[in-house]
Length: 398
Image 1 (cartoon, rainbow, N blue to C red):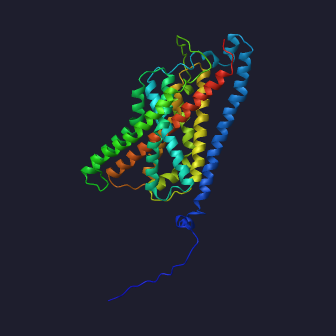
Image 2: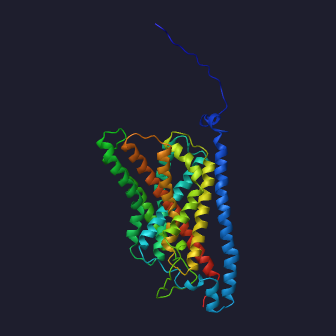
Image 3: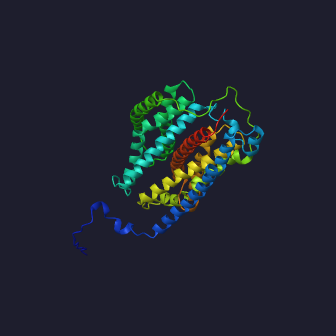
């Protein structure tokens, strides 16, 4: 017989237990790539800031000064056409106003939950090394942020002069969770058929959804209550009774071209950092620098806001006042690019065997892409709302 033995010498250390991995993580060669990602994103933001500054300071200032000098209609048309739609720019969306309100409210709820999760990781209230705990925190915080979603959706729905406020509130509470649970249940059918260890009992999924709904729905109703109690959002111009005719719109200001162009820049501002996040999710690597991720999130928000304002200005200049849905879809298309990126990651970085692992991957990446698109679309929509109120408040309307 051969006896194997080993000896261990314990050495006292002043390093806290929570920081025991820092010797491997701090000073990683990937830090330079993260810095490069931040610089790349900042370059995009600086470029867009210059574009927005040019519009706001030079073009708009010149336009507003000219309009306030009571130019003739012909002279105003020669310079720009955005003032000509002042009687229709705040006309509530005529197509699916409830759906738009629900999407924006859900996006605000997702963005708030993600921001608080990152903040908790930065303050060391959460350990990013424990991926399960971080994911659980996102879900719990999404439920607890139901008041934010209810408040935002109710304010927008009230602005649209709609009456079915209960239906809008319930849809805000259960639409996104219901979609996610439906996708998981379809995936779970295939996992159960093949006898996979990751298959979950359907009763468990339904109970989790009910618990989610029973906690989130009351919070959404509380937020909606305060949203409907608040005064209606004031706008600087009156809306005409008859909608203005929309002329033929150039290709760059009309979907799908405008949607595809606008969504490319927000995605480009986060694509480098996205590679590390995907590697942490699917290649069992570690992602721990939440400060970088918070900076990228701020850059993403700034990029979405500026892209949406530039596209909205171009749209108004060609006398197209139907900016509500377009402002949301322009930035929400970043979720489409995220899904395309996940397909590239699947073919080039992953080595999945069989159709079922691919289905699992695509299902979860679809969920992430939808949530990402809703968050970006919400930022674009709210930014355009603020932008239009500011520019039309600065001109004298006859």
